[in-house]
Image (cartoon, rainbow over all chains, first blue to last red; front, top):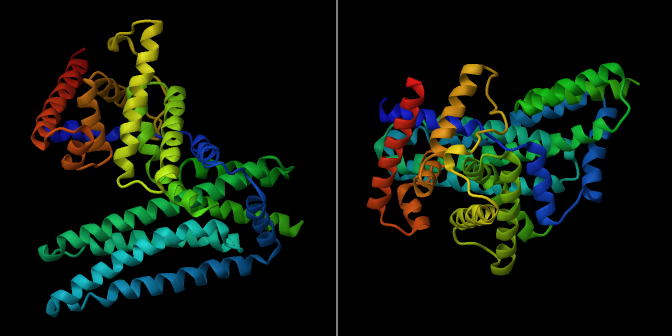
Length: 221
Length: 169
């Protein structure tokens, strides 16, 4: 067996993860904050959002993706033409992108305090997708001169992706726990089961769809 | 939530899964791994409140984790002596497709890593599962980089031997 084969086998251990509920509850216990008033507001937003027409909810999601994606990707695309004729510019753009990702990462912490939590959850998803796009984009830069900075941007992107995913996890987990305590129709219960399954599989985008489906029913009833 | 809590919350989010895996591979019990990991972060949080920041949180947290695992085995040895060979490999199912073959493979790797000497185990986990560069591992272990490289090489050799022996059975 070659070294790389042994290493590949060892890396499979990464699939072992702690229970998500334990991760969240331990954080709450250590940091000494319980599901207080602000968290109750977190719950409220879902049902406020559900009372709005689905079209509005979907439109907010879609417009959010377009605007955020366009702004961030324009930053990325902006430095592409500079590759050939401006090394300093390229380097500066990559550094700027890394700094922006750092700012985004820090601002993710503020999402849980946002008044409109429906948009906060959506934003977490958008930020994650956009950071993934940036990570993929910079990996296409092959010039050795920028290798170090490209690596820095990729690392920053990964941190943003992880942080955004954690925020999504926390918000969706909280909703699931609340829904479990409610009396739901048979159909909503089925959606909740699917929501939980997708959440446990880390399929947060799909989980958002089930949240919306439950919301539709609450709205229609 | 205060600013300091937010900062530590970010550190927690970033490292909790890695630290859990590090501890779990050493104690082979999800419940004990959860308990030790909780204590690691509680201790780190208390330190963080005291100093208002940590220069290298990852290195600090891993030092605490190592000490907590040592304490756990120290306490345990007071109750009974356990051979590493007899540690039962059990725990949460890995989040992979429910295929028996894949599960068995994970069990074999887990066992092979669990059987490594403590220092070798640390290096393998930090380098291959937590992507820590050799330099940083050398810093945590307070050993020269060259020594860490040699230990990593020997650890890989030991893992390979165990895996190949399992295969022959």
